[in-house]
Amino acid sequence: MRLFFIFLFSSLFFTLTANAQHPDSTQHKAPTDSVLERKDSIYTGKNNSQASRDSLDRIMKRNYHRASLYSAILPGAGQVYNKKYWKVPIIYAALGISAYAFFYNKTWYNKCQYALTVTVNQTTDPDSLKAVDTQLVPFVTTGNTNSLITYRDNFRKNQDYSVLFFMMFYALNIVDATVDAHLKDFNVNSDLSFKIKPMFIPGANPVGGITLAFDFHKPRSRGLQMN
Image (cartoon, rainbow, N blue to C red):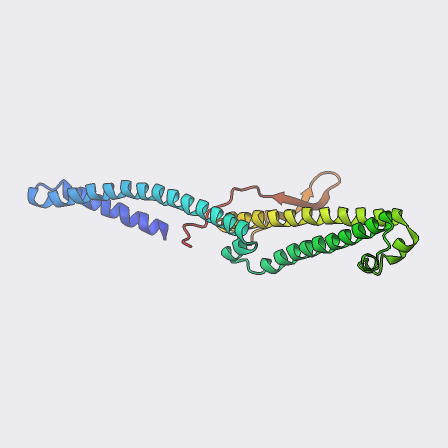
């Protein structure tokens, strides 16, 4: 099909050139202008191609920024913008578990701290003793401060870890949305980047086997996509 268009364009070009060299001045003026207009359209096409690439770059950057911004404001919003809806429950599950772990460990840290305070101060007020968690009462009645301190420190450590995991999952949510926005603008086909091929080495003792052929190529743009 491409050769057909090249042949057609060449035929038209030579036809117009032949008409331009015709001795009748009333017939060669218009074809000459047509040739010039065609050349101008070719140059204009090049400019349009460059403008299209610049427009594509701007749209791609806009998509990256939007996906990152949406996920930073609301976790999962960038994935929805990229139409990766199945990732939203995973993100909220990771963030929800981290948040639950934080409040759970914080609650028990406060309980252990209160029980330790009652034990160290040797409080005998019934209301204060009643406020101690039932699971910590045996440690208070026996004055086992070492166990209370150990439990308190462990809950404090787990609380800090839960904050760290929450921040990590939040950051991964933004990174994932940004990466998806980048990959969405590239042509990803079913061709593998490596192939398994048979191998045969001739000689006195021929050897057969298989080889892995890797293909390191640059990604190709899918073209201009309007969102």
